[in-house]
View 1 (cartoon, rainbow, N blue to C red):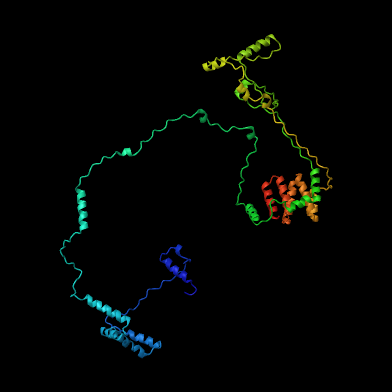
View 2 (view 1 turned 135 degrees about the vertical axis):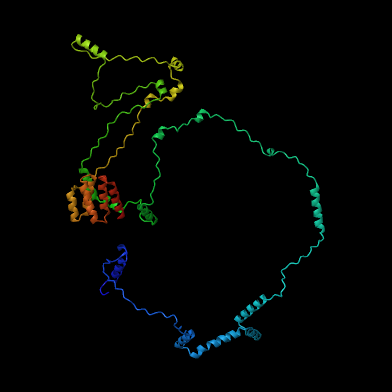
Length: 476
C-alpha cells in the first residue's frame, strides 16, 4: 500500500460495496483499482490417489519421552508394568493375597464387586419376601376384658331417661330497664366563663418558656464551655471592667454626651378618661351624670354641596322675600310624625308599673358614683439626690480627631471618641465605615467590634449589628 492509510483503503472498498458514510471513520475517498480477471489453470482432481500411511502415535510419544531425558528401555517397560497390575487384580491373585495377608484396598473392592455381580446372576435363591396365607385362630378373651364388654352392653340396652331442663333464657338475668332521663338544671347548662377581677386584669402576664434552638452553633459553643467549666457567664468580663474603671475614657464619654443636644420628645396630649358603659339596669336605677369631654376641633371637614329645596320651602321663601327686604333664615321643616306602633300587652303591663325606687339588692350591687370613674392616684416618684461630681476634662470628640489619634497609634483614645459619637448619634455612617476598616486591621480587638455593633444598631442594621457582636464574643 505504501503511504496509503490501510483503514482508508478498506473503508473505500466498503463504501464501494454500499456501506453508508455515517458508519465510516475516514473520508474513504481512495480510488482503489480493480484487478483484471485472470485465467487460472486448475489441475484435475484425481480421486484414486493412494491414502497416506498413518503414523504410530506411540512412536511420537516415545520420541517426546526420549527427548525429555527418559531412556528407551524405561519407556518400553511400561506395558509390562501394566500387565503385571492387571494380573494382580485377578480373582486367583486376590484370593492368594488374602490368604497371605498382603491384600490391598483396591483388590478388596474389586473382589467384593465381583462377588456382588455373581450373587445377582444367581436364580436358585428363594424369595423370602412372599407372605404365606395362614388362617387366623380365635384366641381366648381375658376375664377383665369380658367384664368390661358386658358392662358396656348393659349400658347400651338401658333406655335414656328424659330430664326436664329449664329454658336457656332463665340462665341469664333480664336486662335492667334504662334509667329515666333527668333534666339538666338551667344553672348547670349555662356555660359561664371565668369572671375577671381587677387583680386578674392588672396582673403580670405569665412568662412563657423560652424555646432554645439547640442547632444554633452559639448554643452548642456555650454548652460546651459550660461543661468544660470555663468562664462564668454571671461574671462581668474584664474588658468591660477595664473600660468602666478607666477615668479618662469615662470622662471623654461623659463630655461627649453632655455636649450633645438632648433630643426633644413630643408626648401625646393627655386626654381625660372616658366613662365606661354601664349596664342598662344600673342606668335605670342610678342615673349617672356624664362628664362633658372636650372633643377635638373638626378641621378637615368635607366641603358642603348645594341641594335642591322642596317646592313648599321655595314658595315660602319667595313670599317672605317680597314682604321683607332682608329674608329671614329658613325654618326647618317640622318632623313628620311616625305612624303609631302597637305595643304588646306584656310591655304595656311593664309600663304601668314604673320603677320609682331602687331595691336594696340593686343598690348594694351598684358601685358608688364617686368611685366608679375615679382614676388611681399615682404614687409619688422617689427623688434621688446625686452628690456633685467633678467635671470631666474637656476633650474634643470630632471625627477628625478620632482619625488622627488612630493614625498616631492611640487606639483607646480613638475608640473613646468614636463611642461618644455613637452615643450621640452623630455621623453614624462615617463612624461605621471607619470602624469597619479598623476591624479589618485590628481583628483580635473585641472593643472595635463592640463599638461598631453599637453604631450599626443605632442605624437600624440589626442583623449586621448582631453578627458584629458575635464576632466580638469570639475574640473575648
